Image 1 (cartoon, helix red, strand yellow):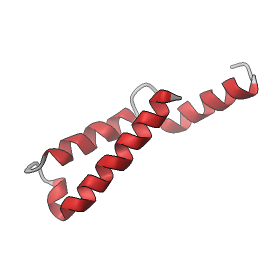
Image 2 (cartoon, helix red, strand yellow):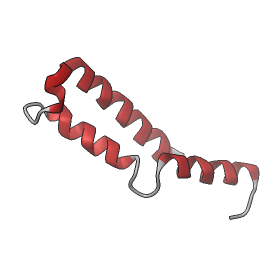
Image 3 (cartoon, one colour):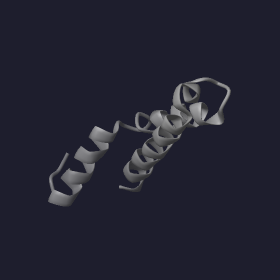
Length: 65
């Protein structure tokens, strides 16, 4: 649950940072671009957020895998 929450929040916060910088936020001139790429990667690494949500819901509902 923590991994899911952290990856979702990291992507949300860095996306706001890119928005603040406007078009320049996508250039390598600002570190926000690298942070945004890293945050997006965390949503994919070790299972996508959708799969993480399914694993969490299965665990909470007592379903076996």
